[in-house]
Length: 191
Length: 270
Image 1: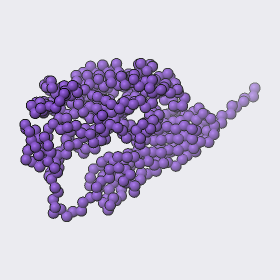
Image 2: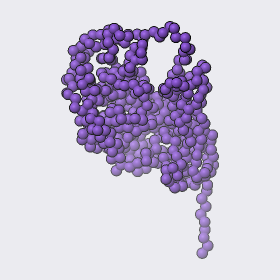
Image 3: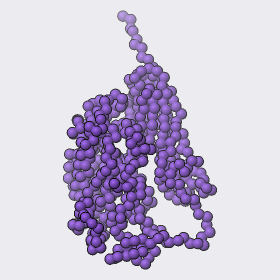
Image 4: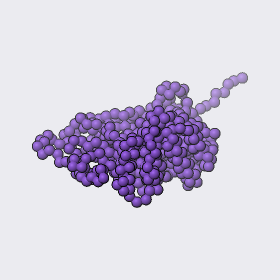
């Protein structure tokens, strides 16, 4: 069962953040991975998000990816994250585990490109996936830039994010919303 | 209706220092796709070009400015792999294999310019001590009374607003946007929220309906409700455009008392 929560904090028992941190981090990692996967398909099969988001949040995901299809875009590359920190965890009066976690989401190695773009150079994909070793030589840079020109590539951002997860227990947590954190944060420099 | 998330803001402040709550909901897909319109950016209409870095067009006579890929928050910038500038232009110092690999220093400004130069814009809210946000206020429904175990709608009246003034003789505008509401309900509990809340009528609710900002008192008595509102600060010269300034400015509302009344059962004679 997934339901909205709205009870005073003092009436519900807390959950120790350490007890749910690992599960929550894995779920967030999977959420970002599936987001990249759906994005790489240009928003197709957005229902795959069902595995990692609640039924309440799924329409938002579907609407967002529908825009990918409308705009004719897709993504390449892989989103990374760091500074994952569980900031609150509790069991609501309805018995729902609710977890809020902060993290720095790094999409700087995710490029938004035109859906009909040609396949990117293999070494560029390796670079975006973080598996490229060394510095790209000039030939690579030229080919990457040619691809960027052709594909209309636009890189993503590095942003502080709050993710809310809920579930019947800590092993069934799903993303219930994500928000941009506008306060102080440690995300300015990648670790 | 979104659930209340006061714990987060409080704990977030502990973890992150002078933190303020997050604001906008977006999916990660929307962020990557550039559809997360509620996220503010510091670049004014700048356009992301290609490569590993974002770049903005340099103004005439200046170096192309390499902007950041941290959306409006920081200074991290991945290494550029390409600049549009041509070698020999004021914007490209070294060009290899058709790519501008190093930027030239900014072109000096004209020396014959006798116009007074505006002061350096402030970068932190603490540099704007002469500018304060309007005082927020507390609204309580029903009007300053309630009953034990019933939800009383408590919300803030704090809007985004601007304050005009002068900075070193230059007319400037400072804009304050409320981003966090820190409540103390006077009964030993409190909450931090990112929303001000609103009246019952605005939400189409009845008296004692629970709202995202309502509070339930357990016992009769008189309680004092207090509120601190944190504001995000933007600044601009009169002719310029707003830019975010680091730091938060807080303002306290005048406290309000609420009477939680005793319920006495009525006995009916046979």
